[in-house]
Image (cartoon, rainbow, N blue to C red):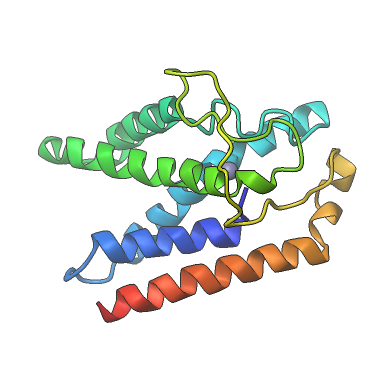
Length: 176
Ligand SMILES: [Zn+2]
């Protein structure tokens, strides 16, 4: 998985792409960043059983979850009926972009499960991307070690790669 920094930057990039020629809207940008990070909520579930990685990149990181979350979010957030389909596609799409990004980082997965359940429920398979683009973020295996395990040189490198790639794309997109 890329870091929350990488996921947030991808949210900002998507905001830029889909909000051209409209007035800047902080609430809207926040929604993009929120849904870009949301799938990693499955790490929090693992804290209840002292194994934060246990449920990570399982069905919460999948096509089925993206459709489900998009549906719930559209019902809760969309006020005008005629915009429902738009919102559904948008929220599902942003959520799923996180899953795809994790897939792009899966070549460097160091803990089980390897890869991402990209297509669940259509397929139970965990897919691993064949090339290294982003680096997996290392973290501790128990509640006590999880946060301390984030501070290492490998993760710093991972974040630098995310910053370089996303900031480049954001700047290019901005000039477009
Ligand atoms: Zn993730």
